[in-house]
Length: 242
Image 1 (tube, rainbow, N blue to C red):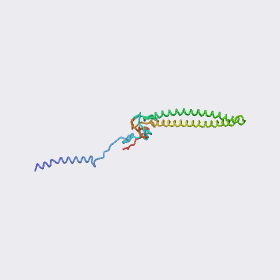
Image 2: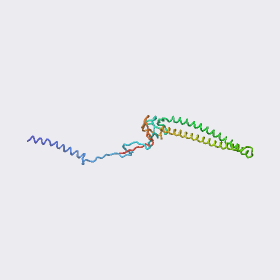
Image 3: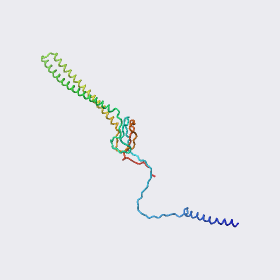
Image 4: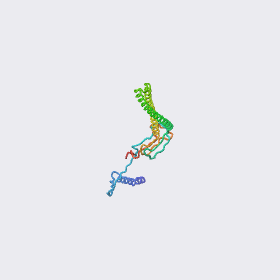
């Protein structure tokens, strides 16, 4: 009995210590704990707010550069990150047979100029002949009225005058036709020049290349972008601030 009693009393100090520790914890950090007060010295200063957020950099003015007609990309002169100027050549498409067609049109235009020059020379000659025929006709009419020449001679000169005027009209028509042929060939040549110009892709504005979507040898359709660029002055950030 004495041994059991001693064991019970041996636990008593431990229990008291646990209760004391619990009371200390409750008093220091529990609802009964005193309010901590931090003392600081008042001073003037600048408050620098700290913001955090994740955003996306975008450009208000972005451009896709590509052909207006189908073609095969021949060369690309810029790469991603390059700074370009407005009007700078960025890439070229294969002209295929445009050079041969241009040479053929130039040869045809030369022949048309020669034909026009010949027609104009003939027109001047016919005008001169018509003037001579008109003078002779008037003179023979006057001589016929004076009975110095026969009526058949007067009629012959009058007919020559009429024929000369018809020749003048024919020469003028030939000159107009040659002039029209030359104008048509020149228009076709200008159309080829404009078509060739579309094969050269140039920068629409000053900017930076952001994408190279096609490589030499790629066949592009009308409106397909080969390169993309942005105007750095139009960059902005779309973000959410926490």
